Length: 349
Image 1 (tube, one colour):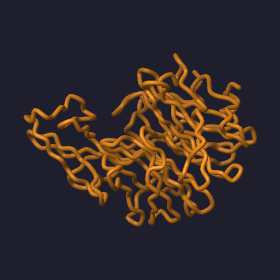
Image 2 (cartoon, one colour):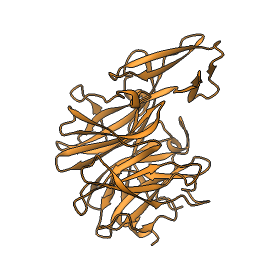
Image 3 (cartoon, rainbow, N blue to C red):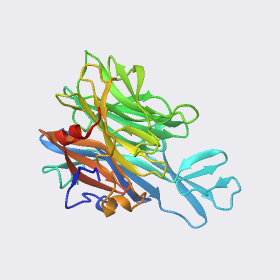
Image 4 (tube, rainbow, N blue to C red):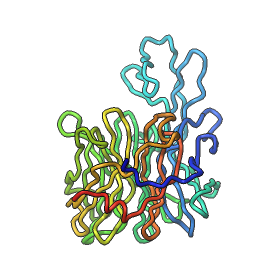
């Protein structure tokens, strides 16, 4: 076994029962994959909350966000021949796909990194406009100077892309729109400029030719991106044989940028690995995990809404210790700690 993560004995930190639905017509199905940040001396989590609609007899009720970020519920009769609801996650009506759940983001804070709570002072973030009508998901948070950059997955009938919002105070947000067009997700901006440029990891998908690989891009302003390069591909018969994608912002070490990523097998078992990238040119991969540094072993990681999953896009760092906040089985929010030195030692150059 290669798992080197130390799980918090009180896991899960948060489960669906611990938060209230966004309104009376919704039910929280899952808590997933929190982005992590520090603000005013506290640890913050930006948690993805997936909700489904309270169902009506004889109908399939589907939630979407309108242009104002408010939930609208679409009711499709089970007797309607235009309806195909054979998949519990995605239905099709008259040629258009709809998700049976939609996600928004909740802000929670903690003084000790373990006990988290919500406050009305900090509003939840919902999908707004045509490109976020099916929700927003899996946010990574990067702080550069005094600005927090929130990169997240925008979901709509138009496809899946990467959106960007920025804030200084977690109350007021500036929407920058879609910065990576479909199909793209898993975007993590580096927490400092390199040679006066922003850098970001992202994951375009190309199932016909290519695959689900990690790419890197650069930008003069954090909004407009170019010079894309593929830096890490799937590997047959390994823990990242089907797809892989970036976790949180890479961590700067003396040996290079340490980027924790998720990898999945053909059986959709999600584990975590790591890349080591060159400090001055992060498109150069110095080393990579041959085996996962964390895999679903605990019962709450093996069973749940979607079992055999550990997935992270948030952490905080204190010296050698990484406090890794992660989603378990697509249902719970959990905590584990890892040693930077131990991860670096495990990598193969």
